[in-house]
Image (tube, rainbow, N blue to C red):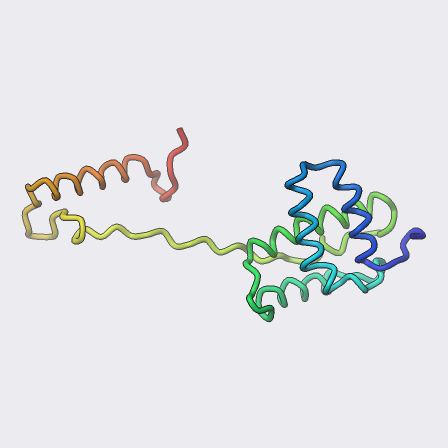
Length: 160
């Protein structure tokens, strides 16, 4: 491939060969899968020097909104991170002046809402009711205390 010429898919394939020697086998498998399954089918035919951030932005949008089944935001973010490395290397090798991934914005992965602990199902006292004094009530209260003592204010587990 002459400098700055060739299809994006050809470049990504060559970059994978470079990356294979620099990362662990499992990491390489992840890179290769993301590029083969998602990047090459969408932007592989576009000439490398003609690839723009909007092409990648459209790729991310279509993967999440129009693909059946849709791809998770986390997977699209991983794809973006791999493409950022690949196109950053193209800049380093003088194939591109600027990385198209630099102008694209990946989605933010959605984190599940934290579960809210209800007092009623586990036997803790509600307003105006005495606590349960049987074994199930004591066990439930201990479970809540252990859970609360091993959880920080933000709801994340304390690292030990």
